[in-house]
Amino acid sequence: MIEWKPLGTGARPVPQPVATPLVWAGAGVGALVLVAVVNTVVGPDRPELALSALSVLAALLGLCARFKAAPGTALLCWLFLNGFAIPPVGTLTWAGDRDTTWLACLLTAALIGTALARLVHARAAYRRLAPGRPRPGTGEGPFDP
Image (cartoon, rainbow, N blue to C red; front, side, top):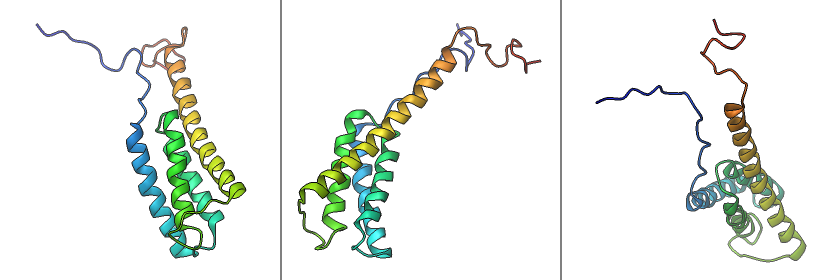
């Protein structure tokens, strides 16, 4: 026997975040491409520009990631920033204050992106489940016929 169920009614689940290894793969490939573009367009003497671009990348990756992916995302972005956006290219160095600040900036960007996504998804889920709100298409709202 076929049982008919209406589609599109009831609570819709909150979207699941992307798997952490996929986010890290995106961070590695994205950081490589961004640093290569910055080095080609303005040269390797502008690490602040590369840091800004990588921070935006980390925040965008955070929008689809879990919180536990943020440290790895920040570390991968920092590795490409440190290794290829600062002369001598291809050499990893550690300059205490500078690199600590850069890692903190990248980690903060990834965490902000993830937190923003979680807030948006939670608010959307709350709006779908809030009692007393008329469902669209039921004729109960002010704009339904």
